[in-house]
Length: 324
Ligand code: HEM
Image 1 (cartoon, rainbow, N blue to C red):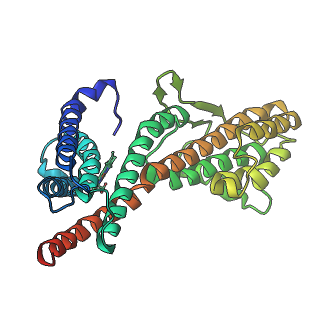
Image 2: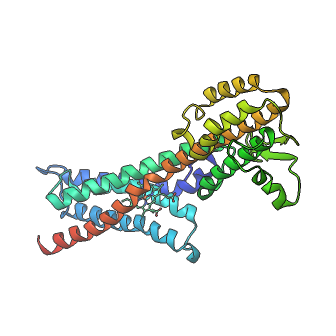
Image 3: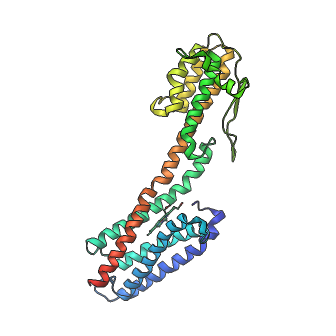
């Protein structure tokens, strides 16, 4: 969730509530420990209260999972849940540290505390990433697409490039010339133009849209284009950095395309702009994948450890009630 000036008001009540809980708990703990030889533990009146409130808050935190799974029941607004999740989640830290009386206790309570702290740390980490990455993505990935479609997009980019190279240079060596025009035959129309790029405006950044004319007959002397497509551009569009690390870097790719333009007759140069744009899109989609990974991978820690936390907390309460 992005926290900014526009939605700060919806966070405000939860921030105030959390500060009141934290401040009140610290004040109570401090007054209960005055004159005592050690910090009040979890079974003292303040310690027990902090444990109960902290435990209930953990259950509330965990309920976010249910809220997400049962979206259609619409129990409260997602925004409100998230704001409460963040601030009430944070206030569990002072509550449960005070509940522990600054002691690790036995093995069960130590493991419980470590899991709890990792859940909190992963939540804070996820929240920080949510503040940074979406705006970066908006600016650096104007060709953004639905994440599940990215791998299909790679295939489309490759096929578009191949079509253009075939019409500009003739069939690739060893290729069936009759298959070259199969797409024209399928559409029932001659291909005269190709379009590439996302039509999207993000702030001041305009997504590139490139339209190129497709030559009606193969351009003599365009073999360097065909060779580069076969050896580098095609594999890069399909498999990315691992196939062609140089094309994965914008500055190096620019050099490669400049070199290619010099070698080609004028009529084939428009095709180079088009291929350069396809490579640019491939880079953007790879970047989108990376951002997506970082935006979601922390949940792989946060969610399973939350489950473990709730289960172990149940054991902790059972042991505390029946074996003490
Ligand atoms: C004891 C404490 C906590 C528990 C048990 C807990 C549990 C959960 C659960 C069960 C989810 C839903 C996972 C899913 O998407 O399926 C979640 C999501 C999340 N939690 Fe926590 N959490 C805790 C504390 C925190 C804290 C302190 C923060 C941040 C300061 C935080 C930030 C988040 C964020 C950003 C999400 C993702 C929501 C989204 O964008 O969909 N959590 N948490």
